[in-house]
Image 1 (tube, rainbow, N blue to C red):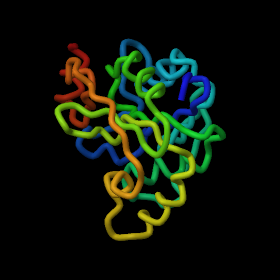
Image 2: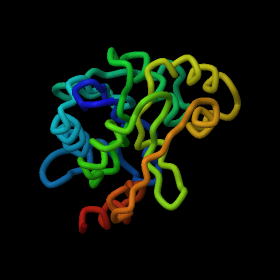
Image 3: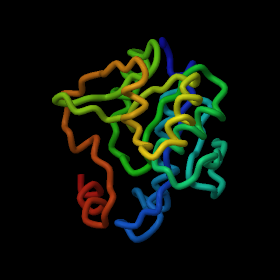
Length: 187
C-alpha cells in the first residue's frame, strides 16, 4: 500500500480494563483523553476513515463499530472494524499504546501488500499493531465462533508479513495497569 490515505484505521478501545480499574480510553494523556490522542495520531498520518471499536462514547471524526460477537477479545474488535471500513485494508492499533511512533505506522502501511502486515521485534509479532485486509472479516468470524479466539489464530490462517522494529521497545508498550500507565506517562 502506498499511502495512509488509501487505508482505514481501527482503534481498539474495548475490553473490561479490569487490571487498570477504569476505562483506558478515558485516561488523561497530556490534557486529552487517550482515545482522542490516538485518533489525532491516526489523522496525522492522513487516514480519513477511523473506526472505533469497543468505546461507544462519541469521538469526533470516528465511526463506532460494536462487536458482532462480543466478549471474545481483540479479534472481536478487529472483526467489527473490518466489517465497517470501506477501504481494502485497515491499520489496527490499541488505544492504550500512546507512544507508537508515527513513522513506524507509516512504514507499516507502506509495507502492506496482502493479508496481514504486523510489527515485530526480535522475532516477536505484535498482532495489535498491524495492517489487516478487509477481506479477512470472514476468517475472523469463523475463529470467533470457535473456542480459541486469539488474533494469532488469524495470523496462522493467512499470509502474514512482518516489519521489524529496531527502535526503543518502550514506545510499543501498552498500559494495562496503573503502574504501567504512570511509567508510560513518564516517558
